[in-house]
Amino acid sequence: MLEHSMAMATTFVGAPYYFSPEMIQELPYNCKCDMWSIGVVLYELICKTRPFSAMELQALMVQILKVEYPSLPLNVSPELRNIVRALLVQNPNERPTAAQLLQ
Image 1 (tube, rainbow, N blue to C red):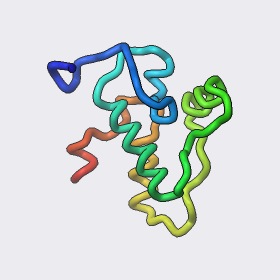
Image 2 (cartoon, one colour):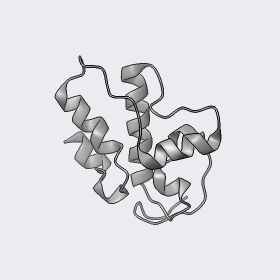
Image 3 (tube, rainbow, N blue to C red):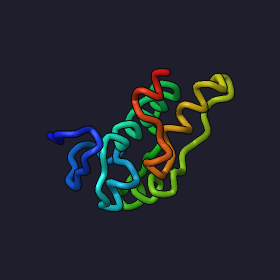
Image 4 (cartoon, rainbow, N blue to C red):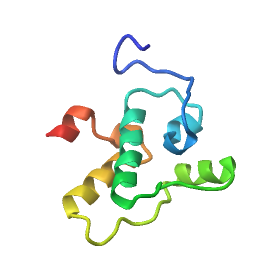
């Protein structure tokens, strides 16, 4: 467990569908990768499907690295679209923190 929320880790476990770009690139990561995963789960809740899905791991990783996912349905509010878009941004420094997300 990381002692400080902004400490960096380099190992990972979990389902690759939820891996952030920095994890795939084997870069040090922090709590911003959790914000990415929240974006993936939020997308799943809205669309009832994963934003990143492929038959092969390599193809899945390319989708995640390019942040290529189907658009949200048209009936999704602009506010919710903005939240998903902010969470699923490639650069972790541009993702909101949990506190910012709740404001």
